[in-house]
Amino acid sequence: MSYGNWMTIAEAARRQRDGEITATEIVQGYLDRIATTQSRLHAFISVDAERALDEAREADVSAAAGHWRGPLHGIPLALKDVIASSNTYTTCHSRLLLDNFTSYDAVCVSKLRAAGAIILGKVATHEFAFGGPSHDLPFPAARNPWNPDRIPGGSSSGSAVAVAAGLSAGALGTDTSGSIRMPASMCGVVGIKPTYGRVSRDGVYPLSYSMDHVGPLTQTVADGAMLLAAMSGAQLSDQPDPLGLGEVAEAGLRGVRVGICREWFEGDLDPDAARVFDRTLDLLRDAGATVANVSLPPIADLNACGRIILLSEGFSIHRATLSARPEDYGQFTRDRMRLGAFISADHYIRAQRMRRDLMARMDHIMESFDILISPTVHGGADRFSDSTETYPFFARPYLTMPFDVTGQPAMSIPHGVTGDGMPLGLQLAARTGRDAGMLRIAHRMEKLLALPRRLP
Amino acid sequence: MRLLESETQAIDEVHFALLARAAGLNLSPSELVVMRRGYVGLQAFLARLPERPDFFDEPATTFEPLDTAAP
Image (cartoon, each protein chain N blue to C red):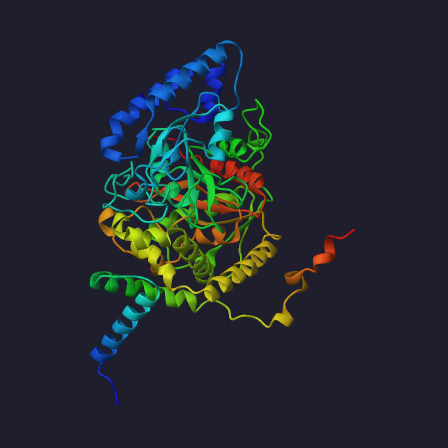
């Protein structure tokens, strides 16, 4: 696929309707680019080229007859391989599920297909959305397209790589402690974790029942909004802009109340991340936003609460197979998941009660702010050779974990690069249920930042 | 009697091995070393959990009467 044929979902939808390009041409372009990059980036676990092209040809016939299936007509997408799709394997990137042939679509996939989307294939993940980056799994780890020696972040690693490298128009990921937002940040794409429960998890392999979220990774906020609208069961229509982002594109940020989560990262950012974040704050102030530091529950409490719940529920899901087939797990997954064995029912219940208290406190704080912001991660992507710690979550609190604990909508948008060219993301979070408001503000910030769209 | 540091460490290691066995984990010696580091990190997280509150101080919404939905 030539770079000239690389486009956003919104552009691909418009150009099909204007007769400038066909779904078949779009899908073939992505398949060609997957073929030329797979040996270097390892983004995909499986590609169903034949089915994708068949569906694209059907989409073109349908369009020629004047029948448009929905706002995602002919749009190629990739699925994190913990999300079931029909007539293919859903392996969770694990030796344990190599033979897991799924004959059904997860509900979120059904909704995307109903809106016209075409599934290209399944993309790499940390094993069971938890154990990575690993080199002892049946498929290689996905690599960052901006520098293949760097990690792409996880666990939705392949999803972020596929979008960043132009291998898919968009992708689905899952987020339990930051697994959509962190790879989005490290690969330079948009990643959205919707409000807890907005997108069905039916057909998605669980990691933590209390905190799992499904969401999109895309090139732009508008593209993410289109996928989220289709997945979350909002009224589908032929409108390419279901959340009204176009209407507010020129509205600016005057009067928007922005809270800085400074207590969570003060003194702990890499220099490039601090520099880029300060520049973004300047831009927000210049655009008329009201920017203020906000007093929040301690980041260590939010991480402890979330990690205890995640480890408890993850261990419960995997307990039997950890006992029967421990050697079939990757080392990271096995050693991390087993920690759940040391958490008592008393601990788990206290963590859940703590979570409820944290949700109430954050909801009260959000009465005073339209949006909270922080860097998504503390710096750019690490080297694979520096990512060998079995328990990284004990070393440094995740800036993304708080909003998995509270269930608030949160997302990452690109807002700069490090001195050596690795992407950096800005995290935004809104009040529970206010996904559309968050997306509108993110869309305006994206315009304000005005970063050039580019392929690695 | 004061224990040497090496003796304290040896006791801790045996203690962790027993804990792991009691938790149903059958760990190799090398796995014990790795997981003990994780166990120490986990203890710091568990220490952040609030103690159980006095139930009589709980907000009323915690225990909603079953008949609130009655017409």
